[in-house]
Length: 124
Image 1 (cartoon, rainbow, N blue to C red):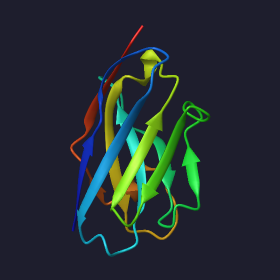
Image 2 (cartoon, rainbow, N blue to C red):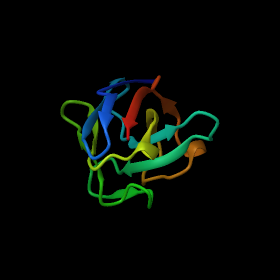
Image 3 (cartoon, rainbow, N blue to C red):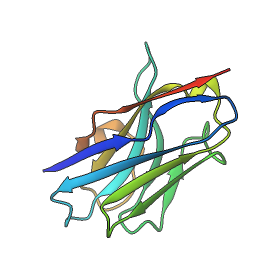
């Protein structure tokens, strides 16, 4: 079992930045691919960014490419999402997720563990 706790959400003006953090605990000695997803009211949960266990491979949704950066620190069991040039359409609850697979993933069903989420609100 892996427990995930997100932090760093909040209210920011359009064009601003936020850094989300995800703390992992439990069976963190295993190799987990990690990802960030988001869900806006009335919409399905969508992929934002993913990273391989080593951190050597990162993937992004087209909507955030060039603005968001995912990274991880395996020594600290932490995953981060740096969000720059934020837009009102980035407003959502952001979730951290862990996959026991050995690669990197974009689909909700490919992830085994989820955090409770952190709210990000971008005002225009």
